[in-house]
Image (cartoon, rainbow, N blue to C red; front, side):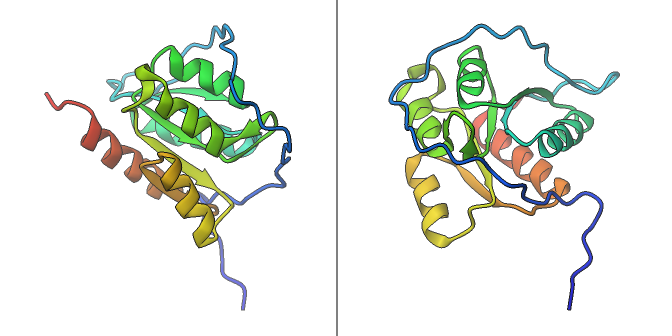
Length: 167
């Protein structure tokens, strides 16, 4: 029996696994303007680190539509640099072309400026050991692909509510 997929479900793509683990990600200059829906007051700045173009664009679209400012990056280095420039929440894929998302998470937690920034891992790695490893590395939440966009937006909203000061 085949389950029907909803139109807002993200399917995992083939991920390039990088066997070289970097101990330190260099900061690079990115001049990326945040994307958010016009006419909607921005609720927070979210950095999405996702190498799959289709998934990244879908995530960006739905978060922007929900009123968030979104910075989409494709690599661990670009994502680390974007978070260093300021983020209220990070949506982090694990299989990135230039490193592993778990390592990025650990490095963000070790950095003073991003130590308390909520991190939502979103990955096709859904084994119990993978989820546990991500949470032990410092992630606040973990979504397994495929996931619905409404679930992603809700989890972002919940994590921001937990960690951002409320007016």
